[in-house]
Image 1: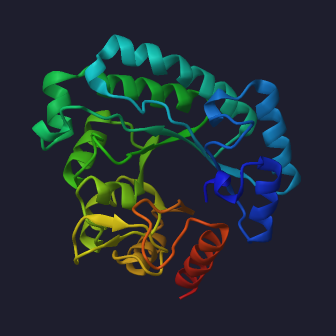
Image 2: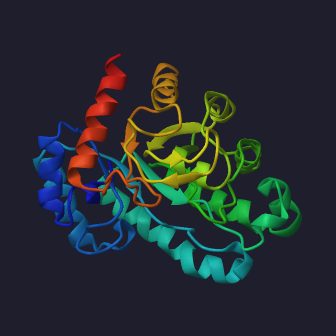
Length: 283
């Protein structure tokens, strides 16, 4: 799970991982009050030492690089983020994660196109080139790259455009897709086994969280546990594990409105989700 879900004090949060039977870390925030890509070398060293002391390898260094709107233009977006790629590579050398996450950018014009790969090719060809440069730089530093979409105006909303984006990126073996199942649902694609099969060629990891709809196949509305989610949690996770598409499953806190039944994003809720995931993997 995201390490900050276990608490704001990272040494204690790492202890909670051990107590809950988790054996890898996903680092995003909650580290000296900073995002992971903002750590100093000395701070990154302390985080690495704390993880090592508890026998917890770092699986993902979850940066927020490229979480911005492409409509600001190439110069501004590159000025904001490309230097951070270089800094992330330096921090990754200290933390030694299995992979480094980059965020798929957004577009204020998202409602005007149905396939981001086509839109980028015609209006913003520099976007794919910018991601390719970042992937190559992190690969040269020794790290796999995973690309993840967020809710809102993300360039990723539909399976086919994700497949087309990766084809245009053309970095097989260097970059893969973290399918955050709820995030893609929030941008318009309800999670099904068919969606998994479409995305399977590019998936390298699953991010899971609950979520409930008011009608079957409808938009996500309520936060929920995994066990109470409206999407086929067990079927999708078991397929990804069987197909070796996600070496680890990362738990994230559910988005959505607080439901009447009292789901409240507490440690108890997260622990129940972990136990539910263990049951799925066992059977």
